[in-house]
Structure formats: C-alpha cells, structure tokens
Amino acid sequence: MRKVLILLYVSFCCLQAYSQGNNYVQNYTKFEGLALTPPMGWNSWNKFACNVDEKMIKEIADVMVSTGMKAAGYTYINIDDCWHGDRDSMGFIHPDPLRFPSGMKALADYIHSRGLKIGIYSDAGSQTCGGRPGSRGYEFQDAHTYASWGIDYLKYDWCNTEGLKAEGAYKTITAALRRAGRPVVLSICEWGNDKPWEWGAQVGHLWRTTGDIYNCFDCVEDHGTWKSWGVMQILDKQEGLRQYAGPGHWNDPDMLEVGNGMPPNQDRAHFSMWCMIAAPLIAGNDLRQMSEQTINILKNKEVIAINQDELGVQGFKYQVKDSIETWYKPLINGDWAVCFLNRAKTPGQLEVSWQLEQVKDTLAKREMDARALIYNIRNLWTAKNMGNTGKALRAVVPGQDVLMLRLSRK
Ligand code: GLA
Image 1 (cartoon, rainbow, N blue to C red):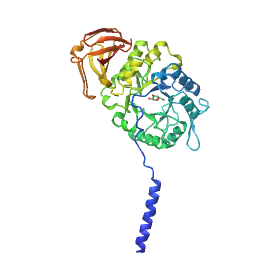
Image 2: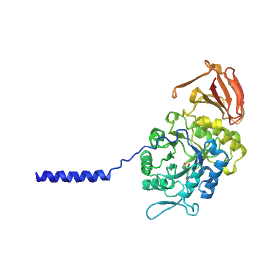
Image 3: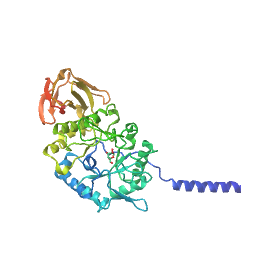
Image 4: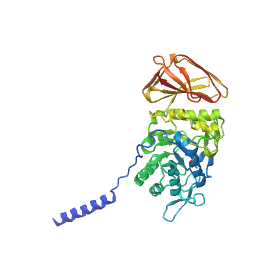
C-alpha cells in the first residue's frame, strides 16, 4: 500500500512538472486575416541593395504619403538585407548603429505615425544572403525583438541553410512570431526550390516562386551558380501555380522593377502582368525620384483594383496568337480583366471577335460568355470607355506593351 501511495505521489509530481513546463502549445500556423488581398508596399533591395539607413527609409515613408502612393494602397515600408549590426552577449540582434542610430523602435514609430507599416528582413540560415546574422537558433528571440520594435511584416530568406528543411524552418519562425504575439505578415523567400506553394498557405502569407528578378524585360543574367531573371522569364515561371493563390496566401513573383530604368512600355507591361497574376505589389524603386510616368504607372487606381480585387483569383493565360498573349482574370461581381500582352518589340495587330468568346475558368468556376452577354469595355491605361463587346475589337498593341481592359456587366 505504501509503495502504491509513493508511486501515485511521484506520478502526480511528474505530471505537474510536465504540465507546468508545457503550458504553451506551439502554433505553427500564420496569423489569419492578414493580406486578404496581395500586400502592397515598398522594399529597399531592388534599388539600394545593402545601402540602407534610417534617413533614407524615413524619406521613403514621407514620399510614400506625399506622392499619393499611400492613398493608392501602398502600405508596407520594408527594409531588406543589411540593416543588421551584431548580436549582443545575450544573443539579441541590434541594427547597425551607424546606419540606424535611433534604433528600430524609433523608426517603426516614425513609419507608424505616417499611417504606414514596417517590414524587416531575416534569414532562416546562419547568415543572410548579404552575410549578416541570420535567425537560425535565434528564431524565438528574434521574433520577440521584432514584436518589441513594432514590426508588421517579415521577409524571411533562405541563404546559408545547409541541413535545414524549408517547411520546418518556416514553421519554426511562424511559431516564434505567434508566440511573440504581434500579427506579422510572413513573406517566405525560398525562391520556389521546395515548392512552397504546396505547404506555404498555412505557414505564411506569400511565397517567392522564383529566384531574383532584375531590371530587364526579357533577359536572363547568369551569375555562375545562380541566375537572375527578367520580367518575362519570371512571368513564364508562374505557369501551373495559380491554383495555390487566394486571399491570405499569394504566389510572389518578386518585387517590382518599375521606375528602375526600363522604358515606360516595359514598365507598364510588367506592372499590368503583376496585377493580372495577383502578385504582391512591392515597389522597388527610389520613390524620392520618380518620373511622372513612373508615378502614373504605380498609382493607376483602375489597374491596382484588378490586383486588389476581393475575389482574389490569380489570372491565367488564355490564348497565344503570334506575339500577343491574352490573359484573363475573373473579378468580383462577374467583371473580368483582360490583358493583351505583346511580347515582341514591334507593334502587333489585335482583333477580338467578342461574339465568339466564351472563357471558362474552371478553377474559380466563372465564365465570361460574350456570346450571351454584353460587357462594357474600359481601357484601364487610357481610362476611357471603349464601347462594348457587341462589336469586334480592333487595336494595335505597341511592342512590349499591353492593352488592358476591364469588362463590366451591363
Ligand atoms: C535574396 C533574395 C532577395 C534579397 C537578397 C538580399 O537574393 O531573394 O530578394 O532579399 O537576398 O540579400
């Protein structure tokens, strides 16, 4: 009897100790309710690479407001690689004291005071791609630090991750962010190596589908062990992925290069296609020095509305005729976006007999039946009405440019 009592007592103590040590169950799923439409904002990498500091970031936040970009929907100011200083003796990460002398909390407060949100960058490996301290082994501590600074968005990269499995590594940072308690958009930057579209929807809000974009419309840059891709090459790599995108979880074909040197026709085509495929719209140019043309592209509200459409369906390539691709995207209320993309350098002749068109999107279970219904046509780049689908459309699409339309039910 005494033995039984002792055994019972020991078991009780063990159970109590166990339950006290495990009173928190990790949550490996992302914060819900964020990024219900593709995230919009700005990121430092495409234009500035490692050349980031608090003065520039504050100026970008200011012009985000003064240029009307914020009013157009751009919200996140994301600092990419190289903001980091060292870890202290307790393992806490600090920003580079020369580049960010006021600290990240002060910068976050500044950005928040402008009605914007702040994003930061880290890496699942031991070091970031730029050789700064990564979060491997410090995930919970870093997530706690970011929450204390007031961070709203985390881009989490994949350099120096030898021996790690992508899904597990991203789940670890998600659990860490959940535990820190501040809702954060998680941008999975794993370049599509381990098919993040197959597991990313539970873990993060967007996932890169490819390697890095670079500022060229139709080219590939070979760096030896890796390549960066032009706009058309990235677009082609989205094939077969649309079924994975939807409210709260998006395919990310990388940040925008609009305003970084391509001519307006190529910038317009790039921006239009990113809108058609419901891509995150993260500007990557110097917002302090935008030409009128760049502003007009990035701020085109009717084109942005296609991207931000609540239905949240990624568009698809419907047809290819000579150099012109026709893309469709179903929209809320039975509307459709149609984009004719001319990939050639020379103008292309377009002729659409709407009365013969019946476009079926089996994924979204939507149908555009111009044989049975008449749609009004709006040209989104000229902001002009163009009659309706009762009559065939004849147009010239300039080289490496688009004709982008919204078809609305009468
Ligand atoms: C990787 C990412 C880029 C950028 C750099 C920073 O290449 O894919 O988007 O964040 O790292 O070093």
